[in-house]
Image 1: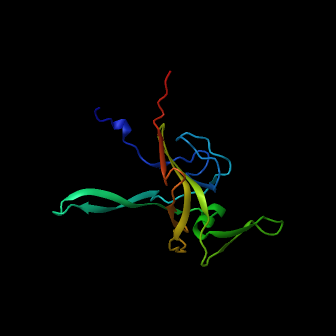
Image 2: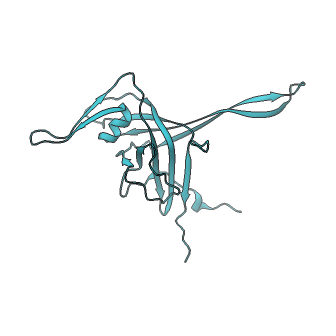
Length: 191
C-alpha cells in the first residue's frame, strides 16, 4: 500500500454542537466509534487553549538477559497514559475539572449564577472522558473510560489574557485492561 496524503490528519477540535472535551459520571454508556452520538450525561468543558490536547502514553519495560548478558526478552512492567490541556473558558465543567470540588448556586433576581471552587487535600472525582477532533469529514474520538485529573496547573490572572485552567488527566484500565481508546472515521461512505 502506498502513501496517501488524505490520511495526514490535523487535530482540530470538533465543536460544532458541543465543545471538544466532555466528561460524564462513571457508568455512562460509552461511545464505540468516532461518530457516536454521546449520552446526554457527557457535559461540555468549553473552550480549550490553542495548544490543544496532548496524549502521552508511557510504557515501562525491564530487560531479561541471558548468562552472557545478551538481551533475550523485554517485558512490560507498567503502562501510564496521561492527557493534558488548558481550559480558557471559566464555567462549571472547566473549573470543576481544575479544582475538583465545586458548588453551583443558581441565579436569582439579585445575583447571577455562582460557582464556588474549594481547593484542598482531596482527590478529584474519577469520570469518563471524551475528546473530539475533526479534519474535514475525518473524525477522531479519544475515549477514556476511567480518568482522574491528578494535576492542576498554575493559574495567572492578568488583564490582557484569558484566565487559563491547565489540567493533567491520569487514566486507569477498564475491565478489558485498556486505559485509552482512539476511534477514527474517514468520512468516506459507500453509495
